[in-house]
Length: 474
Image 1: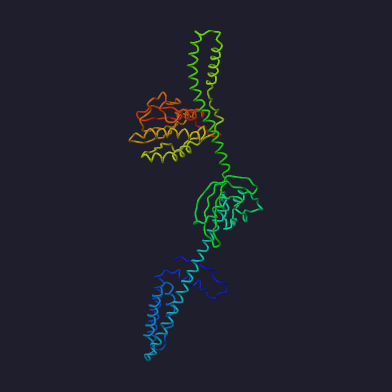
Image 2 (image 1 turned 30 degrees about the horizontal axis):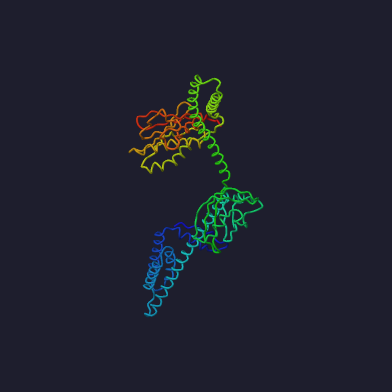
């Protein structure tokens, strides 16, 4: 057992702590062997001297040495042995005197051994407590550094709803300056949800919530909170972690607006495409009728003007965005997010998703959210297609070709019945509006890429071709 050394006291002529440390540093069986040799040597010397003198007092030294490692039972047994050896070479006397000498010797040996044993046990307990206290101080210092350096706001609220401790991040989140602190403020003024949770009389609980917070200046922000309640000596308390999610919400809503605009543009393109087809048919009928109709018929001429105007509106195709307007997208991150989303649904039907990816995936030209939506649509189409098959599997592979990356989605389904019409909008018999593949291809084309159906012996295979972002490009 390794025991930390205590510093010696200044001015002490005999260092008890150092002696104890030295005895503890000697292995157990070696120290017990030394004590046994000393007992044997004392007994032999006492036998040689005979009745001229008694060396019984010397047995105290091996008793003290052996007591360093012996327990109470061992100390009692060794004290009895030493008392018996002393009585063997003691002067003869009456039975009463012999019994009293034996009892006094046994008592002396036993007290010396028990004293040393108690001293050793107390020292071990003291050192263990000191070591435990040192470790506790180290842990407290580490926790303090962790809390103070955390970018999230961490604070504790007492049973009155008053903040009793808070880190610097919490002060910044709630708008307190350097010379002002959140401590002493009522949490009701900043996060009413936590004040309501603190008033809850239920058992201590742990949970998280998203709510509105209020800064010291009155500004409102979106707060993600994780909090727990616990019992203290003066009542229930609450510990909370708060993160300002306002910037994330703004980014998310701006991204949703861009996606809504892009989706609306693509939906309008699909409608205009169909209207253009109808306008072409109407124009052909109008041209045939114009040969037979009277040239002076004003209503007929107006009808022609309406058909021509509608055809011009329908002929407006949506142009792809310039590549410099796009940002880079991490293909690895998009595929990782796709795996998180689709794998549970495939496991539910007893299927599997196989990824065949190179060790390193390049950055591509596009938007992560749009690519994820297009990939998700392809995966969901495969998920519906394999429902009627015994083997339910989706294989997602990535390959490189020139300065393009190709992502292939191959399933074990029955395949595509009508390949020539797979990307046409408003297909008869399609689930929903029949715009999924049409919109996905329009999204990929807006990034300068292409979505196509490749021929397979079994199942369906869709290939997404994207531009690889050049190294060093922004």
